[in-house]
Image (cartoon, rainbow, N blue to C red; front, top):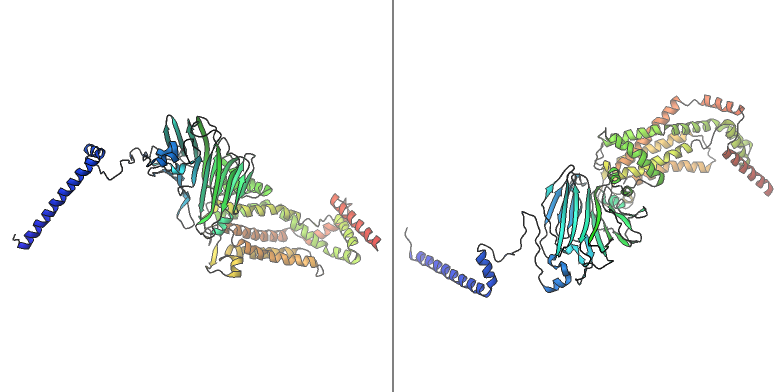
Length: 625
C-alpha cells in the first residue's frame, strides 16, 4: 500500500493529539483523587464503578426501596425523625387478582391506580376507577421534633416483595413501612384477596407515644377526580354524588357543588359514580367528628365528572401499639356486592325512598337476578320482567276495567238524575244513593291503578341504577344503560337542544306513541262526560299532553327504561283487549246492576259520610236563600 506525503502527515498528527489528550486526562484524574481522598478510596475498592452515579440504588431482587440521605440541615429540621425518608425514588408494584389490577406506590405508601378487569369505558378503553396524582391520599400528623406537619405524600416507604398475581382464596399482604429506629415504626398495610373488590387497609404505629403529641388526630386528606366512564357526561354528573354514613346509622349524600362539615362521627365515606364507587370504611372505631367534605364540578372539562374531597380525622390514642383498621371497596355498584360489606353501603344505590326502595329490594331485584341466571340477553329479561309484573298486577287491572264498564252502563241513569235534580248538592246526594243501590263504586277504576303506580315509579329508579345493563346491546340500542340514539347532531340548536339534547331516542318515541294509544283506549272505555263538563275535557287534553312531555324527559334516560314503559303500554293494550273481548258483556252487567237495586244495600262508612256532607251543603244553601 502506497502512502503519499499528506496522508503520512495526517496520521502522525492524529496519533500525537490522542497521546496528548490521554496524558492530560490522567493528570487531571490524579489531581482530583488527591484533592478527594474518600473518592479515591471508593475507586480503589470498586475500580469498575461509575463515580458520577448515585451510590444508592434499588435492590431489584428484594424489590426494596432504598432512601437517599437528606441533603441539608434545613430539611432535617423540617422533617425531624422522618428526614431520612424525605428523599428517594418512587417504585411501583402491581398486584393483580381475578377482578382488579392494583398499582401501589412507595411514595406515600398508597394505592396509586385501580383498573377493573371486567369492565371497559364507553369508548372500550381500560376502565381506570381512579389514579392518584401524588397528593390524592395523604395522611398528615404533628411530630414532636419537626417544624412542619408530617405529610405521608412526601415520604418514601420501604417494602418487600414484588409484583404478583393472585386468585381464588389466596390472600396477599402489601406492607409499606418507615423504620425510625429504637423500635419506632409507621406502616400502611394492605391485605388483598384473590378475587373481589375489597382491600383491608390498616395504619400501624409502633412506639409512637413520644413521636406524636398526646390527643392529636391523624388527618386523612382524600381527593379524587372522578373520570368520565360512560356515554353522556351530563347524565354521569346527575348520577354522581358523595355519600356518607354516620354512627347513628343515618345515610346522606352531597351531589351539588358545596362544602360541608359533618359534626357526628362517620363510619364510611363513598365516592359514587353512576355505576362504580370507591368507598373507605372504618372497620372498628369510627372516624372522629368534624369531618369536612366538598364537591366541585369542573363544567369546562369533558374528562372529569366531578372532584370529591374529604378530610377525615383518625383518633390517635397515644398508644405504643396504635392501629386503625379500615376497609376499601373499589368496584361496581352491584347491590349484592355492596350488601356483602354489611355496613349499609347499599344506601348509595338510588332505589328510591320508603315503599319504592322496598319494592325494588324485595320484588324487582330478586326477579331480575333470577331471570339473569337463565337468560343472557337483557332485552329479553326486561320483556319477561314486564310480563311477570303485568300478570301480578292483572287482578287490579281487571277490577279497574270492570269498574269503568259499570260506570259506562250506569251513565244513562246518572244523566237522568242530573236533569231531574239541577241542584248540584241534591244531584250528588241522589248519585251516591244510586251507587249504593247498584253496588258500583265511582273510585273502583282509580284505586287499583293507584296501587300499580308504586311499581311503575320503582322501575323508574331501578333501571338507571342497574349496572347489569351497562354496555348490553339490544336491537338498535348499543347500550341499554344509556340512550339509544337513532339521530344525533353536534351543533347546539337552541329550542331543540333544550328539549331533546343532541339526539333522538327511538325507544322514547315508541314509548310516547304507545302511551297515547293507551290513553285513547282508556278514554273510549270511560263513560262520556259531555261537552258541558269543562274540567273533564281539560283532563282529557292533559292525558294526551302528558306522553309528549314524557318524551322530552325520557329522551336522555337509559334505553332500558323507555323500552320497559313501551312494553308496559303494549301489554296494557293487550290486556284491555282480552278483557273487553272475553269478559265484558254490557247487557249482562246492566241486568246485574238492576238486580242489585232490588236487594237491600247497606251503605259503607265512606258513602254515608259523603251523603251526610251533601245533605249539610244542601241545607246551608237553603238557609242562604
